Image 1: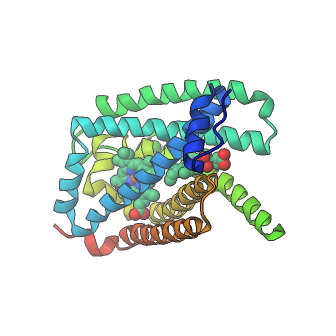
Image 2: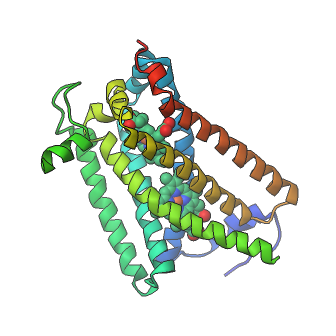
Length: 151
Length: 120
Ligand code: HEM
Ligand code: HEM
């Protein structure tokens, strides 16, 4: 394997990244970084758009309408893959570090990919299928739904 | 040097602990706002939730821990590169100020609900 000694640390980092074939855990590490950065960027955008709430209903609904277009629905669904992977892989990291679960880290990784896939399908059903929609105003929030289930 | 390594250990723990909280928040939030089309995208649904102090409290925690965890994570990534000291200092300042400002914005949005919930 070739090592690049010269150049800035940034270019060396990318060079090293390209010069080996990542194993399962290394892919997970890289994906965890990328998804973590993506979520942080999203959080900034999210707080900014929620700011229009303070301008009142008309302004906020105009913003929210954008997110109901098909392309944004797709983005929302794609964003969920970042949330799901980063969350469950984060949990795997915590279990390996705190619960001594390193022996199981590969099988956990497979479980994560499987769980992520299933949740992605479920989220696609919610976002694109919109199965529980009753009407604009008397639809249930998850909390009300849980209350109905329990009560 | 000992000082520095303790600080690192603390942030290492906090990254994991905040991560576990965010696991619950982020997944729960995502499911909730997508449960129906209107549950996440209408003014009324948001106002209705913000009437509930439990939601307000959860959101304050979500904003705070989200930015702490996210920006601490970015800071860890920056420290993986060997950069001039001035770049570290500058990025720490920028990350901190950005985070503080957006946490303020997020807090203000949910805490000022009474002042905007009746605006047309
Ligand atoms: C949802 C549950 C979450 C869990 C369980 C979790 C867990 C973790 C853990 C354990 C790390 C440390 C990785 C390491 O040091 O090797 C980490 C890194 C990171 N997380 Fe999260 N996280 C979660 C949510 C989030 C959210 C919502 C954001 C964005 C706001 C985020 C952004 C980041 C970033 C930027 C890193 C740095 C990645 C790196 O150092 O390579 N995380 N996460
Ligand atoms: C596309 C998916 C998402 C939608 C449609 C959405 C929607 C919303 C809405 C409508 C609110 C206002 C409160 C409410 O109605 O109950 C809110 C608040 C919030 N969301 Fe999201 N969200 C999404 C994804 C995320 C993700 C991935 C994160 C974390 C990185 C996040 C973090 C937050 C935070 C921290 C708040 C509280 C804001 C504040 O206190 O000002 N959301 N979200």
